Image (tube, rainbow, N blue to C red; front, top):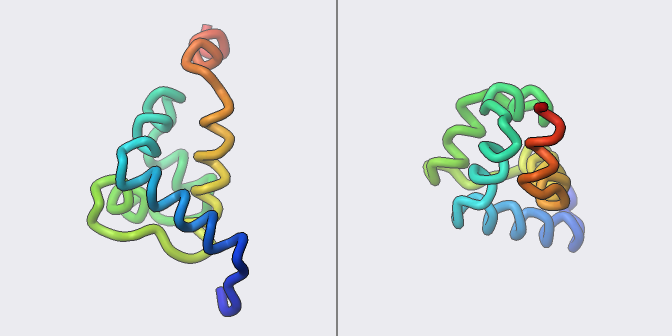
Length: 87
């Protein structure tokens, strides 16, 4: 990611806030998604997602932007949506 746009900076800020507050992990767990599934979907290693969620690393780069898109999509679903889909 060489040139970062204003939109990308805002998306990074959002994903970092979601990670630091625990929202990202809560959304992932509510959706019954494993760290591995999320990592595969966004193109990073499992340890990367784990470190983000544990606060050991800040989300960066293209993987962080993809994680932000996933978080955004998960926010749009309610816990009841996940229960219906797993039934």
